[in-house]
Amino acid sequence: MKILIVDDNVQMRNLLRITFSSNPTYELFQAQSGIEALDLVHSEKPDIVFLDIMMPGEIDGLGVCEHIKSSEYKSCFVVLLSAKGQKTDIERGLAIGADMYLTKPFSPLALVEIVENLSKSE
Image (tube, rainbow, N blue to C red; front, side, top):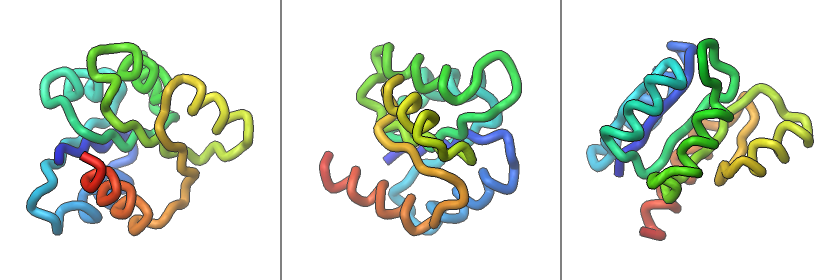
């Protein structure tokens, strides 16, 4: 399973990388910007993307999600990760196509469970 971790915060990327690195069947990719994330989506075709919403630059996480879900990669499972936990934030993320929306802080074990459940459904 290919997993793409997208966050501008290096500590968050490292936490997620460590969370998944113990399973040798996972192929991990990391991006620190929306543009880099889209490049990796096109080149690596991940099965799941853990995507921070608030990132600096030309395209934020919502824009990346919207692009993925309106492209040939729409079957990619997208989990938005955000400190924004208001009902309107969650509704907006899901409305643009995210498969899940998790607010920070979250349990790394919850992320492992999401990936394991997705692996079983394939």
